[in-house]
Image 1 (cartoon, helix red, strand yellow):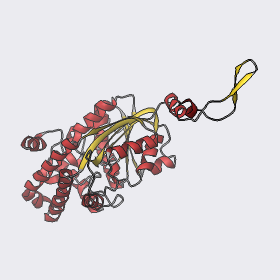
Image 2: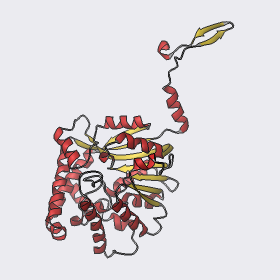
Image 3: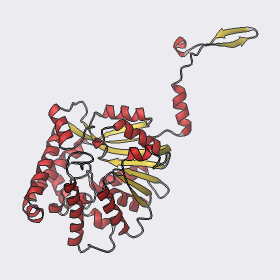
Image 4: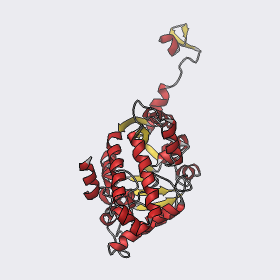
Amino acid sequence: QSSLRGWLKESPVCRLVPLPLCLCCSMAEGASANRGGMTEVMYNWRVAALYNALKQMGKETGDLTVEDLASLGHLDQYHYLGVEANDHVIDILGLDSSVNVVDIGSGIGGPARYISAKSGCTITGVELQEDLNQAATELTKRVPGLSERINFVTGDFATLVNEGKIPANTFDHFLSLLVFLHIPDRAGLLKACYTALKPGATFIIEDFMAKPNTTLTDHEQDRLRNVVSAPTVTTGEDYVAALQAAGFVDLEVVDLSSVWQPWTKARHELYVESKEETVKMHGEEIFNNRVKFYKVIDDLFAGNLGGCRITGRKPSALEAKLIAGRQKNFGGGGVVNVVEGKQRKRVGEAEVA
């Protein structure tokens, strides 16, 4: 525990820097009015906090680097483990300059900037909240050469796909980090993801789930719905079933619970320790609200809430035909020729079995 706390304070990968500014009220936790939970005011403050941090760094205007923004921790990266999780995305999906990626729930654009800068890939970020998207676009333009590879779109991803504003078979990969828990219609969202991907494309999702072999209590479900705005937290098995129903194959679920539990606990404790500086800079009301929120998350992970990384792919065109073929019923009746002048009835698979 102590070593993790030190890592959170000091690591350039995911530190809460500066501590009084990092309230972490991300899309993944405590969402905006469109997602339920935290208010637009909290989100607007979050964007303002990032610009305030840049001002303190002497970078209120002018060019920025991805490192400048990533150094602000969760003001730039709205998910657990910060840019370390982005590195996992790059390595697992094998991203490079040849591919086109969509980031679903792109927040203020931190993952898109970091991943594109490091891998060279082209990224479209889709974010429901307009003010986050505006900030994402403005910040990305300030990083020389990066806006040529990154585009941000405001709207609901499933609606954009269903209305044809995001064409079918567009992307080589999709990623989504701590977002899908907020979407009530998981089936509709996953179907849109399937439609937007090219045949053979792959994906990575990081999300909440119930810890293996546990069941979320009524109290935990209430906290998730009414505090975290997370109406769609299920078991890993149910998650896989939903992905399979959407058409995805080759699915793997990695349990991240043992990583996220101490991480969220350390974050809560570090924020409590930052009270004096935080209250001085942002006021006691913001500090108290965030402490309450972080304690809820800490308590949930100490209980039955866990996390997962899910990867998989959309079948290639030929593979999709094979999958469909395997599901056909061959007992359709009729006859076939056996030898000259002799016939027999078609044999269904049930008869062969």
